[in-house]
Image (cartoon, rainbow, N blue to C red; front, side, top):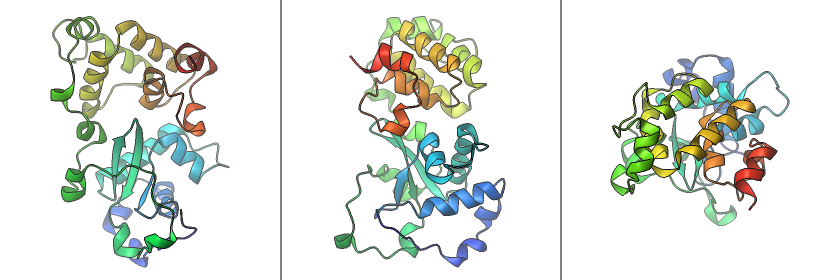
Length: 237
């Protein structure tokens, strides 16, 4: 990763940047550019981004950082996507302002964003761009148990209620990803993951997924968010 990146002075006139919710959001977006690799990509998990940008600011929470990342995505300043079980960020105007000599830089280790997002930058959510229900092998018994028997997620589905009790009411974009989780994992493991997340004050659904996906090979900053209890039950086997 390079030690410096170009931040164009045009950012001061960018309407999208001015529409961000507050100065911390604008500052965080600007600072994060300096962490981009030669492909304009950075980690996108809110906990990791917060640790990168504000290691001395205890008042800035993971949930707050997740909100900032979502608004950058909604303003099309970034592409926020999921690949290989983690969240990543790509700066949409990166190559406009940075002339990269790849021979002098370490190759990117971050997966590329989905081609359809690069081509359209259409504002598809990370959950939607990674979810393909046609590729999911439906386990009907698990789906019925956790969804309430009808195969759809609604506000009375057990997994919906688990999410609401732990993180608050989910955004509409989360309903598809909750359906995928309900299909993929046993109901008792899902319930245990949400329980552990609640007990440990988790602020993001990424915490639940870390437990469900047994992230024993995840980066230290990410796995540290999962409690010793969670790692004991699901990680180190």
